[in-house]
Length: 556
Image (cartoon, rainbow, N blue to C red; front, side, top):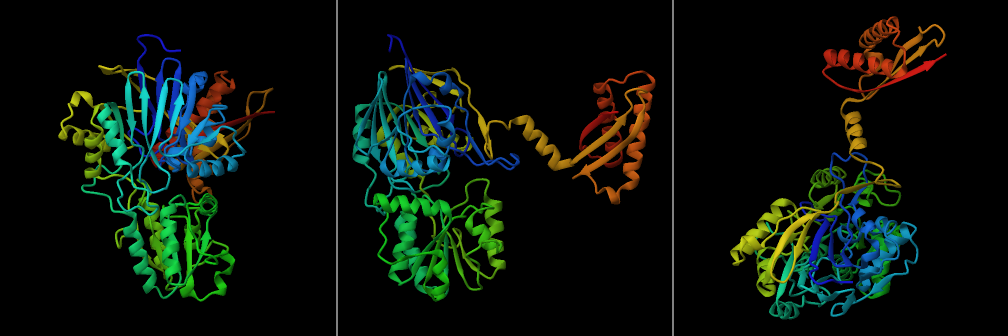
């Protein structure tokens, strides 16, 4: 229930000062709506971590206020955290377009959340009423069909969220971004706009997806051997263009990779992909065709170690291997942080004798995000009173703020904030009013959140300097060392080649323990501290390294 004087609160649990993990919350009185629920991929120092998802502890505490979760599109950085978050937030209605919910359904089933009862299909042009919020979905363009922007009417004014978008006048599916409706909303008056900043560094306009189709047509017509195309599993427009080019040159198409197989099945069932009869073949049947009639669509455009293309490149795939002369097209640009993996993959493919075409060599990829001139157009149409740049690292947010200033917005009306920072609005003012809990929850295998900073610190320590286990057996009756110390080394030195170092270390530890025992200090905590400190100091003096030291004391 709303009270007089309630203010609109807007904050992000992910997606600010980072790429991915997008999640935004609007709260007014007793009503909360959530926009998107994405994941991010781990940074290099997050050793062993599979995924990073937002910390939703604030939402868990306020679950009774949540009226719904709205999804703007089906990319992992906007929906990938759902299988994990829905284990904490029960029975929340989830609204999304048909394709978005189709892909979400696959993700939930893969994580044993079967037939989630609260998936609510909507389409561009629909209006959703959730508590005091009225949310209109607006057709936009992105690198996946069925993406939408959101115009959210609140008691204090309109909030416009672009979602991930670009302006494509010749999209593959024919559905042009609804600039007319966006302009109408701008004329009504928009309180605040939250806009995608991913491509703000790039001048001009983003190329149309059709440009990639023209490049494929040219490449496929000249290819003399097999063609392998790696792209994002969710890039249905790109898959459609590969299929169109293959069909034009009488080539057959095989799908390789579980995620892309699942997406193609959903897209076909829902009518987002058009594939001529008999064009698709099973991956097992590629050996029955001449090489110049085979096209393989696969995953692995980011060089992920376990992806299909990475396994093909290292001859570890059971059904596909690279033959000299094969043409591999990597139809994607690197997600920040993946550059090393992609370069390693390209080098491995060249070593196998393949010809490799990637973004810097030909127009085999276009972005799904707006460049500077497109951002300027949206700002000019929406004309918000306040502006919050989102979806980007800090440099992206700063550059996007500068664009808004160039277009005449006062710097005092622009908010560059971090995850968890709460913005509070009424009709006439906006201010930072506090913080909520926000951060990274790390997913490692089946564990969600059970690996934190301390565990990561230990993993880093182990990776850098290794581990020493020091085992000592002490007589309970006489308080004397009966056996040991024995030393087990993992990742520090190879014991057989460092016998003198290990023997000296054992001697130093033994002498320190004997001195301690003489002083009648025989409690385990004291003895373990003596072992750790003595071994650490000695080994650092001799090697300038600090392995993790685990003392093990046994009493007999």
